[in-house]
Length: 342
Ligand SMILES: Nc1ncnc2c1ncn2[C@@H]1O[C@H](COP(=O)(O)OP(=O)(O)OP(=O)(O)O)[C@@H](O)[C@H]1O
Image (tube, rainbow, N blue to C red):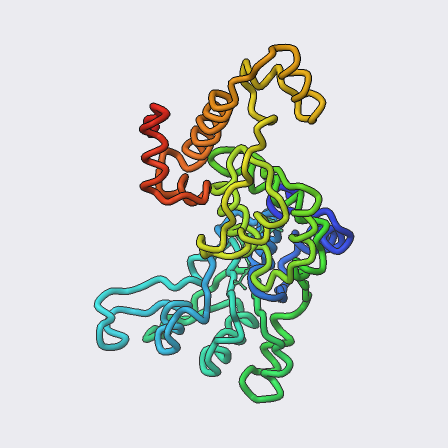
């Protein structure tokens, strides 16, 4: 996979991040990846591992997701009978990363006793399983990530200074999405390409403006949610500013009904001959002597209901919401016009 496909973004700040990855990826030194949640720290770790040329796997662990008393055995493994419940020998994640990369996400959550052991493992490139006596050599490269300021944790004695020095030979910072909003269209295109439908969102300039001024507290993860929601809600439809605003939130109730279709925009044998200006309407009446207004309106109604049913994938309730009608009213209109739900 190409670096540009893995880590999407073309703004100067992303270009400089990618240059750093290309430069330090192939070395074996530890790297600390910093940045707010959802910015792509794990993606950066994958990119560094990809560039490293190391043949072993990248083994990830979220240190904040493992109870403190289990973390040591998770990382270092244990021998059979090392503690109550250790019924068999277990190979820890550091050993599993032999020849590859160990990625410790949320390293700031690691308890102090495990920090000491991690430091020793980094300095000696050996580990000792819990309950085991013999040091085992392991060739692993450590990548860590945090959304915290670890120097503050050092000051509060929650993180060891010597470990911080050891894991931060290089520090990379992944920028917040609000600081690189020019990347949003590119990221959305890549997300569409990777999606099942493959169809790219069609955004008006106003909708793009809504996205570029949003604060994105959840960063690219939040943008992915926006993308997935908008793909479901606005299939085959251009997304306007209000639609974009609504799709930023998970609650479907905030959605506006679909924009009503203007009669002139509905293609039809009768309507095609009728343009959208008052002059066109006048000529239509003059040329034909009379026009069947009820028939024309009925055709328009039929088209609009068909479109709403199509957008709602046959759900009469959703179509009724889109048309600002009660469900029963819509069913009545459908029966009258001979429309069957698809
Ligand atoms: N530059 C990017 N290009 C493509 N996808 C990205 C990029 N950045 C983030 N993502 C996507 O956004 C989501 C969150 O990314 P990731 O898990 O790497 O963030 P994180 O910073 O590690 O988050 P956390 O701090 O919560 O662990 C993932 O689905 C990831 O694929």
